[in-house]
Amino acid sequence: MNLKHRSVAVLFAILVVVMLGFGIIIPVLPLYARSMGATSVHLGLLMATFSFFQFIFAPVWGSLSDRIGRKPVLMLGLVGYMLSHLVNGAAQNIAMLFAARIMGGILSSAALPTSLALVSDVTSERDRGGGMGIMGAAMGVGIIFGPSVGGLLAHYTSSYRAPFFVAAGLVAALIPLAQWLLTETLPVHERARHRQAHAENGAATMGDRLRELGQAVRGNLAFYFVLTFLVSFAAANLEGIFSFFAMDKFGYGTKEIGVMFTVMGIVAVIVQVALVGRAINWFGENRLILIGLALTAIGFYLLTVARSFAPVTTFLILNMTGGSLLRPAVNSIVSKRTATGQGAAMGLLSSFESLGRIIGPVWAGAVYRLGVNLPFLTGAAITAIGLVLALFLLPRHSTPAADAEPLITNPPPES
Image (cartoon, rainbow, N blue to C red; front, side, top):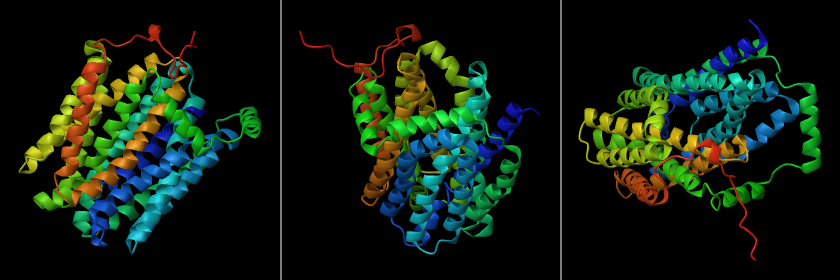
């Protein structure tokens, strides 16, 4: 097996295991935290803490991997990710849970982006889309089976701790395999060039990132960035508090919640693999955005009136289908309309999504104390507002790549 195929195969395994570990704790962490006395506010902050540290450290690790190579940064991320699961599993109080979430947020942001950068190193431009597709499939596999494994483990072991230790064990088993099979893919001269550029220009500061975000919301693609934030904020209202909602309103445990999240993951993968590409060709990105917003808003609202397992699962599927149509459509049109570089455009979209996932869980945790339906009513309202704005602001056709515009443009000088 040559370097390219071996690296992609090992990275596939890494991303399956990393995302499996992420998925395993989705149905368990909220109930685990509650067993230690956590309120919905604590839970919102736990979820936001992870996203906040990812937002801060992802560019740091990315820059470091350019200077010292992909493999050491990736290995550090895997070791740290394993340790964060161990700390989660051994936690005795809420403070230890926060410590584990901080560690996980910092170090998982080393593993995932570096894996994708490594794929870029070993694939040609022609093959890169296929390589990224394989990595996306790996993450999808982990997300599909993770919640089910986590829910069943907690159910049959009668322990909220077991899923965290299993996740840590999976990563621990992968670390020697990655160390043995992965070869550094970034050439020495490229690392030297990036080190020189870093020495001359210095590292980007948080102020630089905030100025970049501010410029984006004044540019030609401003609405798509704002929409990404709104949708991410709404989705975080569901993901951050759903386990509490399912237990408090219906009496469901980890088994039922794990099954629901697994069904959601399967639907998301099917929609994105089998439907999104065709739907974009049929309707265009902007019309697909409208459809996605409508389905998402309806799904949020119907969750508040559901009364049993089948309707709850059905409305979750409706919500997930809307999001699965919406996000790729936004990514596609931003990619087509930017003339300033795909990396910059996708990086900005990721930043706006991270901001939504920071603020959304905190909001959900706060309003949940006032009413169990309020986080989902908030999600419905936010996406409905996005739908109304989109109806007025988006043209009904999608802009082709030939009409690409700069991501951020300066206003013309005054005459």
